[in-house]
Image (tube, rainbow, N blue to C red; front, side, top):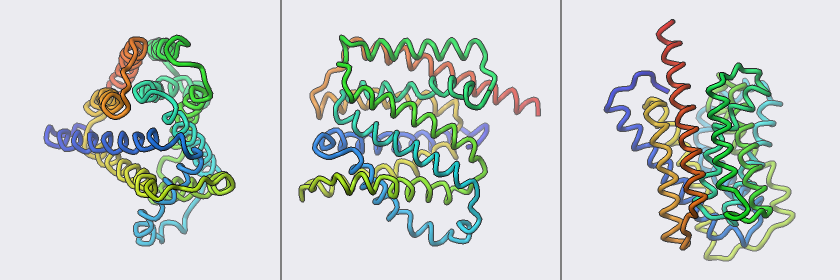
Amino acid sequence: MSQGASAKDNFRAGLWLMADMGLNIWAISIVKALGAGYPAWQIVFLRALTGLVLILPWLVRQRHVLARIDRVALHLFRVALSAAALTGGFYAVAHLPLAFYMTMNFTRPVVLVALSALVLRETVSGARWFAAGLGLVGAFIAASPGNVPWTPALLAALVAVLAGTGAIIVTRQLKGTPPVVMMLFYTGGLALITSWPALSGWQPVAAGHWPFLLAVGVFSQAAQFCFLRAHWLGDAGFLGPLGYSSLILSGLVGYVFFSEIPSLNTVIGAAIIVSATAFLTYRTARLRTHAASAN
């Protein structure tokens, strides 16, 4: 990620980030439309297998790097957490309103504060704890029983947030690992770890559904590239607030394609969560700026 990016680079980064959000929304929309008819494990397996095929040429070109793989246990732990996050997320999005699902996803920075303190023993200031608490209040408002029924889908969304945040923490521990190694373990590992539950409980795929289910893998893999490109070009302080537009985008997609109207509780909860995560993003960027100035 660049430091002190120019206005032109930030503009280009913003376009890459918008592409990332658009591709992710379309992938999630396909899962929402078709996911109730197939086991979540099966969709995750197809998504990972498609992604693995797409990155094979890159893996072949970078095969010399793959000979120097270390910290295998951490890689496998990251894959297990990612598998739980994706499976829980795919199940949740198939059974919950799209805007609500995206709102819950925005609690990850809030959960990251707590897990960083508990797992990594990082020092967390009172202001950051307050923001984390505020974000959780927003989550409770959005997930109140009168707004969203407390079903297995809600539990799956919680698992997705916790496991996804855990995967971020493990990724921090793998800092310095070549990207090709990270991608191989993530994509190949996901395909491997989900193969048994997916194949053992396989549901026959309708011919007309194959292009859409394979598109989930294509869109997700392309979105990951766009995300990395955006954060390579632009400043986190610029990209952070722009990311909140995915809530608006998901709300529009939910309304137009699934006839979903976000409830008042979802809107209020989303506003509180966005405020908390925006503060955390701003404070993190400010601390990094001060640290860079000191050095």
